[in-house]
Amino acid sequence: MITRIVVLTFEENKVQEFLSLFDEHARQIRNYPGCMELVLCKDTRIANRFYTYSVWNSEQDLENYRQSDFFRQLWSKIKGLLKEKPLAFSLQAYKQIP
Image (cartoon, rainbow, N blue to C red; front, side, top):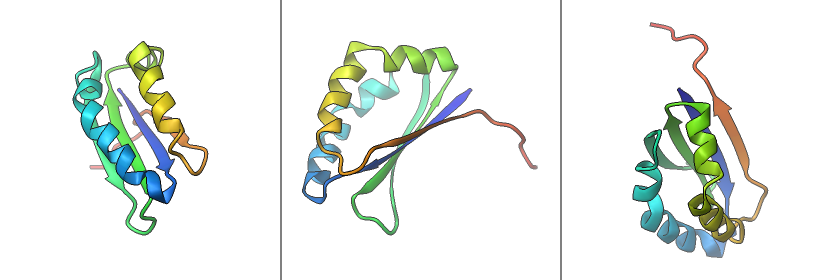
């Protein structure tokens, strides 16, 4: 499994536009083949910063999504709302502490 975390900092006046886009497309992302979980988190201190947290069956499933026309079209809309360059992390569980 792959966990993908993307940090998105928006122009303050573009936050609502992003939230509308996310609400409109979240089900499609969540139902994309290989996506097991999708969560949108909001920073507790920075009002215009959000994090997407998604879990994928495999790195290939994530890559298939990232190369899809759906992702490209959605990402082109989201990029225009950003204040800062996004940060993205792909993580694999290393050690679980019981």
